[in-house]
Image (tube, rainbow, N blue to C red; front, side, top):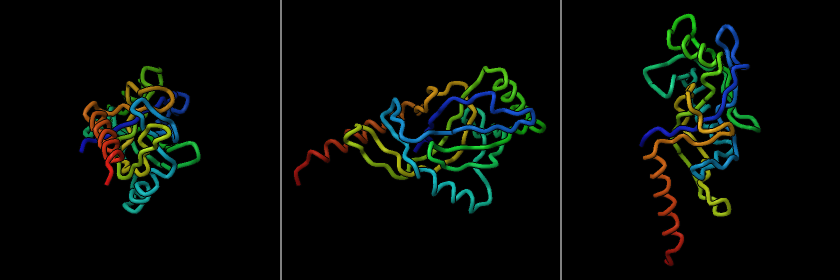
Length: 177
């Protein structure tokens, strides 16, 4: 299964001279362009697993596993969404300095989560897939967030897979056993 992603806008105001930053990595209860809604509590188990390991997911550059540019010092759910505080490693990593300059100057304004879906449910009223439990793998600084609210930037293959799941659910719901 491919890693899925969701993005949202990130403001340079939240970026300090030492590379520390904060912002929402994802917001809850927003139906996105792929007809998915991340629900409150979706990250709790994953965050607990990261804490048990004594670390947090990495801050990546553009979802590239080979470009770790920072560390999260805090990640937690609140009423609005998944909130994070992190630090770009601008003293030690060239790509982090590049990311810092681009965010600071407004050229890049996106945060995007990389995750796998563990639990979901179909919401008939909303005609949307509710994401109930996500396995958070990383959070990236990205060039193109899907939009300023919090929308999907899934790869096309994943989008098609979700549509196939919805079609299968509709077929199963219409079967009379």
